[in-house]
Figure 1 (cartoon, rainbow, N blue to C red):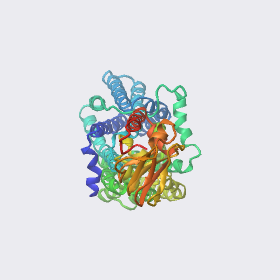
Figure 2 (spheres, helix red, strand yellow):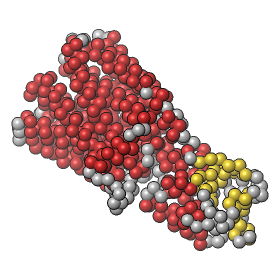
Figure 3 (cartoon, rainbow, N blue to C red):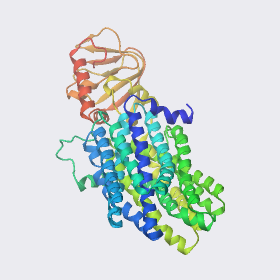
Figure 4 (cartoon, helix red, strand yellow):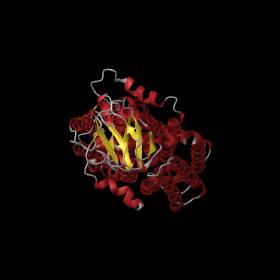
Length: 548
């Protein structure tokens, strides 16, 4: 499949994935246009100093509150959580719109717009936590991640451009009016998704409030590989925050141009992100993603640093476009790796921590620019940021590479498990995780795989050969063959084996331990109920070929 075809395959989904991706595209336009509109508003009211202060004031509350507020993405059904998150964005943009239309004092407008920044920070973690449930295959999940990054790139370029036009034409209020309409439409698109919650909402042991945020942090605490991955992923946002503030002084000092050139400098990486997301769609289906993560970080940093070497607009945009390609490679592969290696019950919270570190990265990049520019030139500041990004990506490799071993993507095992009725509707990352904990077992003709009456400890999927089912010493008619399975009754119902299974020919099985099997199948109430119904029917039907 071509890179573009791989990145677009999620658009053919019938699971609601297409609607969620359209909603995410609208969300991106809201995020980037509202951000630029309020920075332009601050610049008009108090110059570069106020604009810098506003950037930090907007981002810090969002980075602190996002992990806590995004926790409802694990407790609510994820479809409902997405609707609520987009609705909160719509409400906050309406609040900012009201403040602007009424010409409220500057601090009031900034406070209102800060609620928009906080609200926007809630959506992305829930979006990426919902994608694994909506995707039907591992490739479709990678495609959804890729398309999300493509939409980020489009939003990063189109959002600021639209904001600049709207502010110049009528003022920032027009931007927030459009943002309100787009966010409302996004909420409508996410209705009736019928997704599961990450955890049982009736579980009294589940955390609430700030404990929700802490659960995501606790999940990552001490996991140096995952923490290093988050740190590397933050590179993109540090550079993005730096570019937002560096664009204007670089356009004036190095290029001798004005605000229009600054907008092109800031938006160039967005076009690169669009291209990089297409490339990442084909690369991120591979078993090992860490080399792609590190390569993306190196390309991103090197492209950013190279801006210091040129003094004209087109080459500067070309290097920033290259930087955006690297950033997309890093983010798509990094997010896919997080999805592969994180338990579903805390996935939204882990992505909320990632969102928080991203916002802190944006704030850090924006805050460091005045320091570097006062010490040296805007062009040299590009070199400092870029060199730091390359160094960080390379230094993190030894720790991050452990995640590839943990993910252990095994496509043959996944393809064998996916069609089995027991795993119907199971998210692809759960299949991948279960496949990673499985083992191949070769058996000879006449060998008993399980014996009636013994304790069940393993589930088996048949890859090759024929197997006979024996109940009370009497063989059943027919055979179990490749593409079928046995062993689930004893595991799900906690009873002794209800039948013996003996190899009629030489064969090969995929063996999955009870803990890995039960973790995957009982991860949500719907999947558990479906598996219990299936196994109960097999248990009662003595003529079923799939009974154990």
